[in-house]
Length: 246
Image 1 (cartoon, helix red, strand yellow):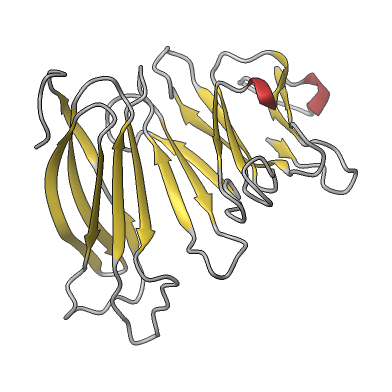
Image 2 (cartoon, rainbow, N blue to C red):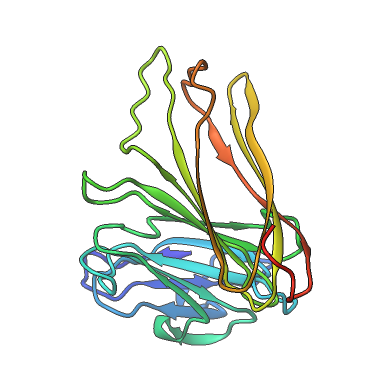
């Protein structure tokens, strides 16, 4: 659980308690206390378990500080701590740190779950954007026993404004292979919402180490969407490092 300490100018904290729990428990008696970097950067405003992000058999924790200025004013920063955790741990000592760009407000929301079915937890961070000129986005980082894929979905023509009668939109998809071997990923873009479950595009792509892939996709222009959620991507298999792009 988090305590951003906005009003007492503190650095913010997050408290980790190991279950089972019962009765009244003081925050100072937590099994682990995570302490923010900078006063009033709102460390602890968002907290989530992410499962086993690094594949070592222990669950991990992500904590957000959306007012952190490490990448510019209100860029935001996400801190992932690999379990098991104990004692007092400084945010600067987190095992995996993601920093946004100016005005991103990265990590106003955070979540974790196994999105790609590989048995390791994945990290999801939201960036609603403080600036009206910049599009909000969600960044997904796949957990692994080694760094793997980075995936980003962003609006092509922000902001997306869908009227009550419905409307269409375009999105950019970016994939980056951050591992040291070639990997193949199956991509399917689905729109899921009330009375709606539709795949708008699907394909596979093999990326060599460090390779990037970009595509803009266009949901069927003859259809008008009122609301829904986007789902995307699953790693299919590892291929030899000598393999080329598919």
